[in-house]
Length: 118
Image (cartoon, one colour):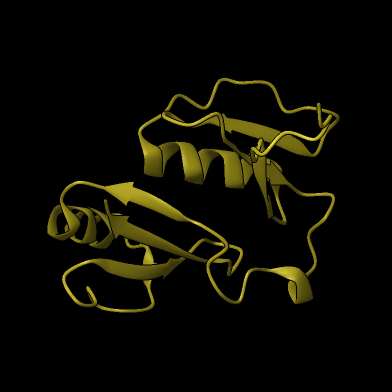
């Protein structure tokens, strides 16, 4: 039996200010921001579905290391509603809805992310 599982446990996002990033992502995803900041630089956002979490990490942040292309995407069932929601939050959108299926945006640290219709 292979001791390395064919699973991804978490995705790390480099952020400059862990509290600001926690508050922004929790607000964006409609989650409470009352979880613990671990070791002064980590905040785990539990995601639904597959066993995969998003980990905000201010220890690995540098302006050179932000995501220049999306490393993952958030799912949506309603792409137009998701786009309008992001506009209402004044999120920096980097594309329009492309092919009726996805759009790009940036978090406050400049990480390029994506929302995709599943």
